[in-house]
Length: 478
Image 1 (cartoon, rainbow, N blue to C red):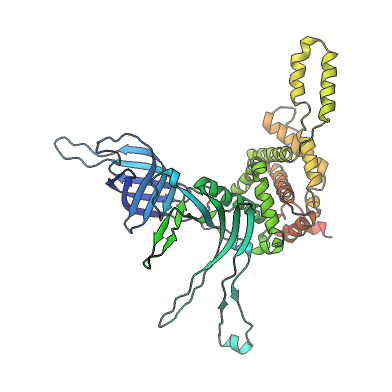
Image 2: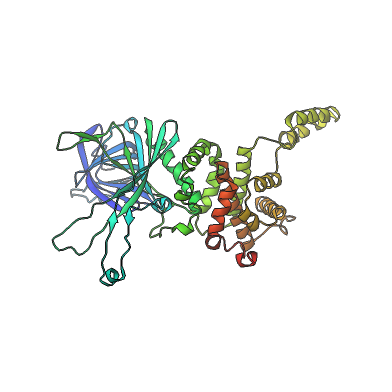
């Protein structure tokens, strides 16, 4: 999925398989797929109409079955007209949402599966389990360049995601080849995340499991990540092998991956906020809590996760999105108000009864939002509830931190002259945002079950590598 490719073949509509048009499908991880045809799927008209297609089927030059889903025609025509001469065929181009290699489906309604599997960038590094074993060698064996490699494929790691969905970390490895004159040997271990549901689901529904886990992984990696390859399986799509047995077909799924970064190096264990091995006893509970709360917390999480996808890009909107994420997170996890609701209702009644009726429209409008918590109160409660020892060093003066976030948010939202002096700018605003981002990550992790002690130990382990720009740790440890 994270490589460019081109498929040459014949393409046709499900209800008109006899009208086959030659063309090329080109895919790029960031831009998605485009199908360019030499001719028209609809008719032999010289100027084909711009007609979108739910499904386009294809057979590649290597006899692969291809299903294209959500095909929007973006171009039609292009052939040159010369009077008195025979004209060539026009070209038509479609932008494709989903490409499925390995199956044919005639209707979108048929695209139902029960299993999604995906390699995710840095997943193997996060799981941190290898099948390689290196025996201790003597000094003489080392001098003689004796090399002994032992490899055993690790057992799958199984866990429940929810009542109807099982998750697995599957370890995959190639079997090394042998030759008459052996010059090299290669064993490549990979790790896939798999979610299997009890009932068939649409592509979009299964992707929710993949992206849900991917976003959890972003928190514990403290870094953006993306799927490196996706496979769908379901009982509706089977392939018959030469032995006569039928097996479920592998449908390779491709679509645009906006946060893909070419030639990115994997992280090492000492750069990760948490490794799987450090939380394996609690992992199933954490991941179940994550998925059970994901829909509730998704609006706040989307604002937070955008900061990781931006990588090293920073601007005022980065800070504003984090401030909004904090407000949304607190609103979604708390239901209290400034004044108890019954008292507020009583106060509203008394105020209206004691003021002239001509002021009531304005007063009622104020009362509609007057009992909501403001940003200052919400941030103060987040910092108090979701703190830990290392975070307390990074955000040493919580009251001052809250004021800086509040003043900066107010200024960059309204750009009032009075607020300009109190708002942070440039590098100061960047460091404020970095601290707020870390505070929100800790809040999300504690909300799904991580303890303050777990967070303190983890942050202490990585503070020199990940947060050295926020605190002078040398001074703190004197």
